[in-house]
Amino acid sequence: MSERGTADPDISPLSTIMARLRDRQTGCPWDVAQDFASIAPYTIEEAYEVADSIAREDMAGLRDELGDLLLQVIFHSRMAEEAGHFSLDDVIRGICDKMIRRHPHVFAKGDQSPGWEAIKAQEREEGGATGALDGVALSLPALMRAQKLQKRAARTGFDWPDVSDVRAKVLEELEELEEAADPDEVENEAGDLLFAAVNLVRHHGVDAEAALRRANAKFERRFREMEAMAGATFQGLSLDDKEALWSAAKARGL
Image (tube, rainbow, N blue to C red):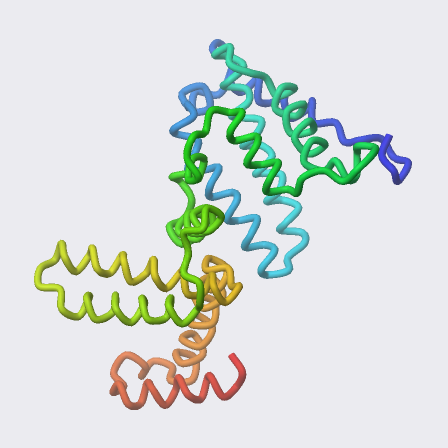
């Protein structure tokens, strides 16, 4: 029973549905044909749709998107069970054990134990990790992964001591990009500039992925307002006229 007195949620019906969908004889041909690699993009997409519902404060949408994300967990677990790797029960048991292990101040008696990051580092070591950067997923969005790599490196002492040093590095990378002579060099220097920019916002205590997502949303709002103000004439306006519309949209607080 949950603390609210109602029965704990039962996900077994969803697990049963997935088992039927994956049945080699009577299931859905599309579901049967899938594997971990083919489903992974859908898993990532569903996670982003959860984040989008939260950003829009759409609770009905969030409920639906969480269901879609849960289905992804069931799907991967079912495929793993079919291959003899692990089951959904193993997944649930594993995350329960992990959360209890990482919150000894809540679940364990006695003295306060090491913090969250220290416990995670110990888990990585016990799992065979040998380097500080081990375990940073390759599939993460590039900005998010850059920030995680930088944080991991910083824990070893490999970090700029002052934000002014990071700012100087950004300016250095910008200059190198401007001096790049061929497409490969331009791409290389552009990557260095973006990486340095992530480092700068990290030193300001800002999450780079969240900040860029917010900037994207702001740009979209203002651009759509520009189009709405100009109507069918928007495409043919001069850059100066479009800049004026942008300023007007900005002045409206968009």
